[in-house]
Length: 454
Image (cartoon, helix red, strand yellow):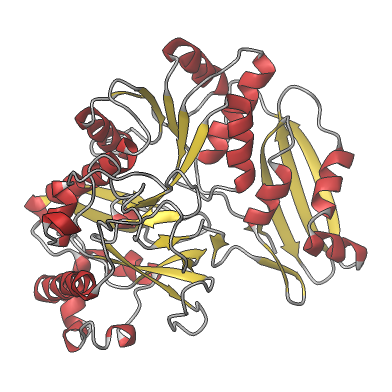
């Protein structure tokens, strides 16, 4: 059990509306040890829940008063009492009604993020932020980064950095507030360039996209230069245990997973030293898990689709927004001592699983766990062809350095019961394509999905 000092994080205390004795220790922040056995810092008592209920009521009232969408959709009829009866906001609604959801004048909007979904036609999703919304994001990032970095640390960031208010820019501001030295390179485009930057900078901490960071680590291993960093933070896409274990092995570092979505203002939650789920920023986000087929809230510990409600957003609040991510609320208290709610790692997207045989679903997460451990494999793609006459599963392997043999890939794939049973049934053909990835290229930064072709 970690020791806790009686210092106070004034930002968290102010946002939760708690007294000094009930707020959170500053040196451990939201996501590390929030209490010890003798002196709990943050109790989940009636007062705590009353504050969170008040935040939900306030955000709901704000949205109804200022947004034509919420006003016209009957949200004034709801409160925390009948919260679960309230309509769910689908991604299609966000795509079509984003302008009607805005709660302030255009002059107050400081940043608009356009989200293009792969395979989706029509209008993209657009998310609107005020400057205060972005300031909150900086605070989320500072809280998270302070938990495993120290003043003076050199932090290399390989995340989107092409526009003002980008995730890299906000993270950089947060790191500077904590006395760190950030260096933003944007999204990786070339493994060879990223490798050169890594050698030149010799960072203490790396922040990056999971598949790109893993590819860089494997590339560096082939190039033969030992890499040593203290820690790595991964975000923006699902993160398998295999990615974490491989990075820890190659770079002898601690790997942390961060969960955040653009729709949430990039905030969400982060792992603590125990590395068992994301501790949530409960003062800013209300999380529910629903059965995606019925829309009903499921008990803690049950896997389902995550639904979010932003509690302090000014530009475009989201009330019960369906994220499409499948996870669960972990019912047990974290062994680090935190009383904050945790969600498990994002297992897959609601639309991702493919049914190879009746009641046998295959997810990208399972493929990641079995394939990404192959030493020379940098990335892979999946194409699913469920035609009645010809059912095919095509796996394209992108490798560097030593040649990967099809037998090794097949062996890994046959360890997945759904794949093995499908091939053995004779109803499916498994095709493996090997393609060498050049150092002048890099795995795509886009969220990875299983492509379906008819």
